[in-house]
Amino acid sequence: MTLKHSLPLLALSLTLTGCGVYKKYQRPTVDTSVYRGDKIDTLSQDTTSFGQTPWRALFTDAPLQALIEKALQQNIDLLSANLSTQQAEAQLKAARLSFFPSLTLAPSLSAGKTEGVPATYSYTLPVQASWQVDLFGSLLNASRSTQAQLLRAQAYQQLVRGRVIASVANSYYTLLMLDRQLQLSRSAAELAAHTLEVMQAQKDFGRAMESSVQSARANLHQVEASIPEIERQITTTENALALLLGESPRTYSRSTLEAQQLPSTFAVGVPAQLLSARPDVRVAEMALASCYYQTNGARAAFYPSLNISGSAGWTGALGQAVSNPMKFIASALASLAQPIFANGKLIAGLRVAEAEEEKARLAFQQSLYNAGAEVSNALALYEASEAKIKAETLQIESLEKNVEIVEALFKTGKTSSYLEVITAQQALLQAQLSQIQDRFSKMQAVVNLYNALGGGAQ
Image (cartoon, rainbow, N blue to C red):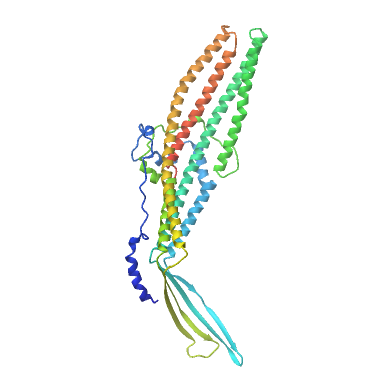
């Protein structure tokens, strides 16, 4: 088939654009009512989202900022995601170049020898060209699919970045919590040791019973037993932080739990913002877009394909006295291939592509539900922690007064057993440890909410 005979096919292809193989991806209708109303009634829900806050403005602690900076430079998962993005960029470039003809220089030299006749040599210097005419969007859909995969890789890179920031912050705050618990437990151990000395002295003077001494000694051992476990948790958390930072385990300098300042009011933004703010949602949507174009490509496989090829160059003889040693040669060929029977492979391929597209659509919708659930969970954790901290503050005040009263009664001899003093001290210690845990939970809720709203991705 000559090139001029293929021109009517170009006109025919224009009439077939309604078949769907040229259509661009459009976001499907999805349910964006993903926030629980009972968790955001008291929060701002305007166009500004807490997730848009730069991470340096949220995490103002200098040691924490240094750790996050190091993690963004050295985290293994983030470095791997960066390489995946570079691969996707190279693949997109290759897909776009497929629209252009390919050129090949193919020089050749031949020799011939016949008995009694001198050997003859000839050569050709052709440039060969081939071009696949994208009549029905096969190359176009492949290029669009590759572009969606690049956007997916970029979104995944942002997803990993946001998770790294949140993980480093949570690990850092965990260390601050454990440091405070360790400090409190050591102070309690010192108090318990002093109490045991007092009880032993009072027993020696006949003012206390042996049971009171044993109770004080048991209380001391109980407090001392909790310290190694806290120290183990500190080591484990530091090791986990080292993995996030892409380095060997070590000890990290840090501030104190009391020195941390985090916001107490938030704007979660309108639910539709999760479509663009959450990197994992964009990852799911770009996977859907890629599958959409692959389905279009599977449909385009049912239509004819047109390939144009040609060559041009020079040919001549060597070693002979000829009047015209070089001659210009050229050829061109256009071929049209229409699938007729392919053992059901084309139909099966289309069905597979359609099924993958539907799975990607469901995953996209699920990613929105996951996003809404994470936002609601973070808000619920923040509200519950804040309420518990307020109640525990009042509880600690009462327990501190109770310890003072019980100790004063014992010193004046108005109570016969020091067990009441030990019980009051234990209750106070447990309340203080619980409040430290809830303060950490409140800080963790802020970090989780920030991450759930797409914070730290940029």
